[in-house]
Length: 409
Image (cartoon, rainbow, N blue to C red):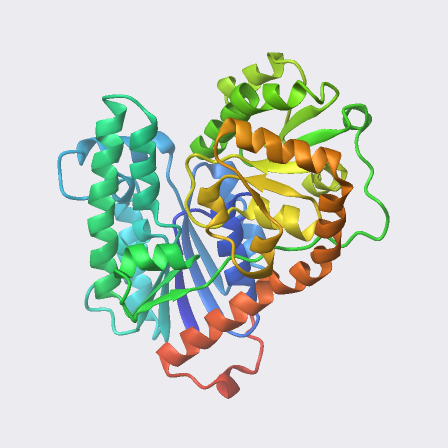
């Protein structure tokens, strides 16, 4: 197949959940199909990621969109019908580039990654169009609205309502919609839309031939509870503040030696300030997250704001580390993986579950025993194979016609 693929963020390096899913889709599909990628970067430095993507994409077009420009577009369109998050990406240069590509190439399929990119597809496009909503962003904005005070609550609620209408409109216009969990499918399709398919996220297991070596300062911090994520992302920031302020002190009453490690790049000032609390360590970005996972006594995912599958939960599961999490992200995990999660919502209950893991080695043993099977079940390949099959069906292309690996410039 010849595929036009549009993404709202350049998916390299794949260091965030949305970029990771996009990267694995591109890498898998490009092994047997020709892909032209059009995407945005926040800066010229980030746009340099196109060099790695050109190793497997036929062509890569990157539009550098400075955040201040995007925010100005959002503000200008604030009182209009277009959601602010869609207006953010309303780039004339991207419109021109995509239209030129559609006119020049006879694409078998157009793949839209994130609802913000749907605006670039003309209604007259001849190729079938697939959109991957990833997580339901409209639901996330609605959660933001409930977590803040006025006037931010009004702005977020408006965005949630506006984006929800936009998502449903796009789902009706395009040939196929994809989401990460059945919950998103229910929200998007109203429970009975046949054009919505669930393609879950996968997780890439590290190839470790020797035991990972933790930095000396982290070895001294053991035992520790661990949270991993981009620490400028609002749901992550809210989660670690909630744990550090309301849950961790309860655990420390009986486990004063326990540390809480917050691992991830770009920590906000509010996150950095948590390091002033007894037992809390904020590392910032680290070279190898898997080493920190391997050394953790327990991983925590205390999300009050969450939508879709949390990759950090999947990564802990395949590493054999016990996971304590709130019910919202737990609902996105199914099958065998869900059976070994410890779910709690109140601070007291959450602290109790963490305490149980620390006191009972059976939780760690059970997690370690399940890890090999989960590595197989949660791998990327099953999900991506199913995605490819759906795309080939929609494009009317027989798998036999795509047996040759495309040559990339």
